[in-house]
Image (cartoon, rainbow, N blue to C red; front, side, top):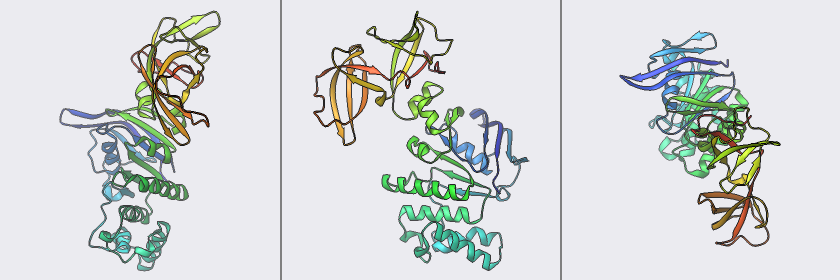
Length: 362
């Protein structure tokens, strides 16, 4: 049975040190929900509160309509996958996967059937008689995932499960995790500080900072329309420029430092002429134009050719350095010292209040 997880006004503190001041979130049935944020932001603490491993100083936690604040962790029917795998070194792969089922005293034939099912699903059947020391990191994590899923939990909790793997294995395993979660439809709460990983696996992401959820949305919405400057800079790469709002008979827009006016049709009503703002321009949202074109003047510092794309670091005439990503052209790459003009994709950039606390884009 899949469950909806409802958390209302959660409070976590150690003595006078408040880790999570007041957190409310609803996680939908069957959803792959990720807690994303920098180290120390409270995401693992919240996961452990859901699991029952951490005390709850305030608020209410529900699985569907059942309040679980005081429910023993063993009775919450959760599967847990840890960063360090936490599989038993003295047991074979098969015995590791069967461990939770034996603890629940299921009939032997049912234990055998479920164990074989998840060994096969995780593609580790051929290693079932091996001890964990004879497995790679990726294979050990498959064992940990199979063991967590074999008990058919209502909720799957995963705490930085891929952070100990090398880059290639991380990509491979995140695809495995997403595929398995998708086929089983199990409500999953996933913790990571890796924004690319979060974007790849999640239905929705909660971006956290200092125990506070900054924004909850789909990966696409978080990337394209971040709610504040923290989210804009944490999800993907971006250039942040200090500019101001202008208004004329045709409408509103952003005035850049050299006087270049960029009209914008999607600014909120509260954006006022002369207002200082932070403008977030992702590297691919710049357009390199000829020296005679309108735009912001810039000088190329250096370039990096990466096959499909070429990355440029340029210095604007206003003195700010920005990164630009352009699709690689057949003709020559711009040389160091080249004078260029930059235009901006006005429908894609984001504009925030001067303190970065909220977006001014509809």
